[in-house]
Length: 340
Image (cartoon, rainbow, N blue to C red; front, top):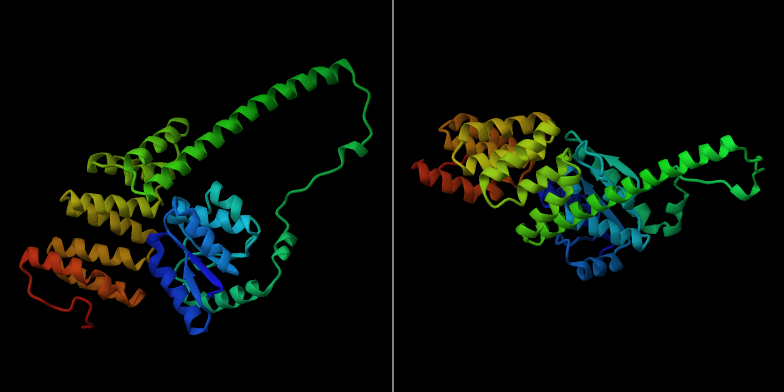
């Protein structure tokens, strides 16, 4: 039975394949975690078999229901987890609660090929270490025995101060409840989105945004849950306004604009996304498609070649879409990935 369970968001499949290939070369078996956030029984079965979980983390992972459920199940079983960060995004609060104490490997900025050997070694070590060792990690939490403290004599001033403090704590408790409800609505929306329930996802994400309208991740997910392109583009634009470095929202808005026939601005969005994450092979391939559609074949070739350089599987992954664009424009058959 494969000892390693590999969890990743669909947008990170190229990075995940790089990690999986490294394990294969080392002779370590790998299973891919179910990506449907509602498939709890399948996720539980995969966790039961695994001895260590490797989490490929990115901005896309923060809004992925499948990733959240895998981390939750692994934490529940006290299964060792290793986080491989392929961009600079920090885990969202829901995911972070399950990853506390897990070792993190920095593979952002195109460093993944140099990190894979270390990832394999760390996973091998984790698979052989008792699960209780993870408890030795200092997560910053602690406490004191309040029963052993000397209690000062209460005065009227202390009583007034106590009332004020209790009132403040009540306000904080209510705010905490509201934050938890907002987070829960967001996670339900993401889970419904993963299950294909766009209307249900939109309703839950709208509830989350009603309480927290400045949540960039929620606006990005709201865009994915939209049925019409105008709402989709508006939601992605709101996410970008709140977080100009949200490369995933930029790329998603670019795709929506391309589908709307706005090739020029679609290309601009992919260019902006790649300025933030230059090593994303898929986005290079997508921009190449946009450039083909605009008649800029030389730029398209450069992007397709960069896609293939970053990810050797790009020619196969984009073959159908390239053929469709070429056919629509009457372009002759050619190898868009061939070296000059």
